[in-house]
Every structure is written in C-alpha cells, then in structure tokens.
Length: 182
Image (tube, rainbow, N blue to C red; front, side):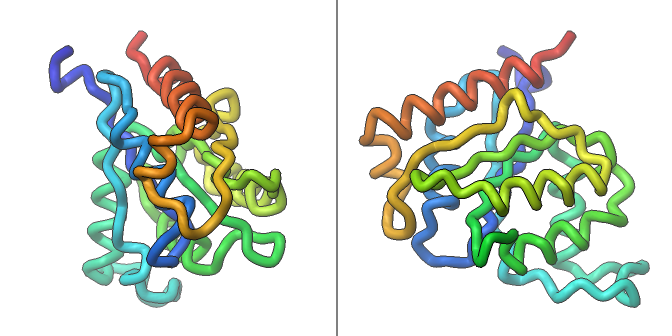
C-alpha cells in the first residue's frame, strides 16, 4: 500500500477527562486501524477558545487555525462523543462551532463511535443533527457502539477485551471500505 493511497482520519475525542472512555476507544482504534487508514488523534480540545463569531476572521486564533488545518488535511473524521445531561458536551460543541466556517468541512465524511455500554443515544442523535446542519457527510453505515464500562478504562483495556475490540475492528473495517477509492 502506498502512502498516497492511505486515508487520513482525524479522531476527535469529545471529552476533556484525563481518563476518558472516548479517548481510550480512539487510542485503541489507532492501534487496530487497517492498512488503508491512518488515524490521527486530535488533542487540542481543551485549548480552543470559546467560539465567538467576532473572532472568526483572519488571523484566526492559532489553536483554531491548527484545528481547521487538521480537518482540511484529513479525508474523514471519527468522533467519539460522551453524553452529558442527555446532550453533546460543551467543549465538543465549541469545537464544532469553530468548524462551521471551515470552507472544506461541508461534505467531509464523518463517522461516530459511541463508547457506552449503557446505550446512550441522546448525544449521538444531537450530534447527528448538528453535523447534518453543518453539511457533513454522515457515515451512518460505519458508525456504531463500542461497549465500554465508562471512565477509567484505557486503550490497553479496550485492546485486551474481546467484545469492545471486535466491535472496534468491525467499525474500522467499515470505515476503510467506505473511504476506499473508486
């Protein structure tokens, strides 16, 4: 496989927690990614300033410029979003608000991974609505749940458990197929 044929996927964890199940599932995904995929973990969520339309002009705040460059340089996004009070966490919504004005975001393929064993769906539903409004190309056929016990598990735990590992491998296989050329 040539480097040019690989698909770059920007992984966006939606949690600010130091030990986050959502971050763990994305870190594990990087280890399990099939050869056609290059998964890159975004780690600037906490550094983004609060969205203010007055600041959406040149020059953009440096952290926002780096976020947009990372999105521009990716073939797809993979978002792992926790659910807080039946909704999308404020920090992730803030990140998405900064992407509304990103010229290369419309049409960007986006897959969602739900890292909850409790079947939370409110945040996933809200996130889908936000992304549709932003003109993302939602990959619903790829998106899925990787059942994790919640905060406190890390990537090694995910990789060492057959059920979440197999769910993640299946999701990544679907993502590779959806992003395959031709």
